[in-house]
Image (tube, rainbow, N blue to C red; front, side, top):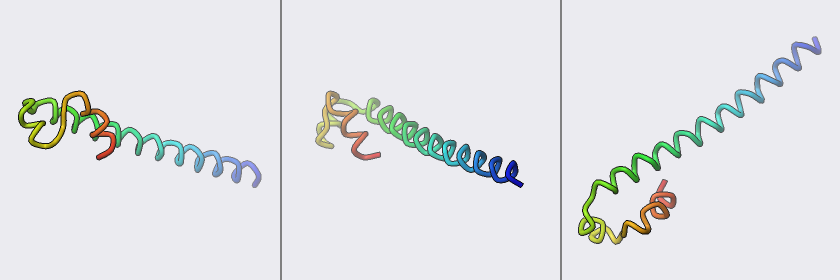
Length: 64
């Protein structure tokens, strides 16, 4: 019985860790896609949005 409890706890810990990793990966990938989309814009289009190339990463991190 003790082994079963330890195994369940370990599996739950792994599942929790994996869920956290998965969430961080999704967030990072969303930031990457957003940054790529902004990089395709011209400097004029970025200026219309109130952005510059120098502040893109900070702006994307704040949005995602």
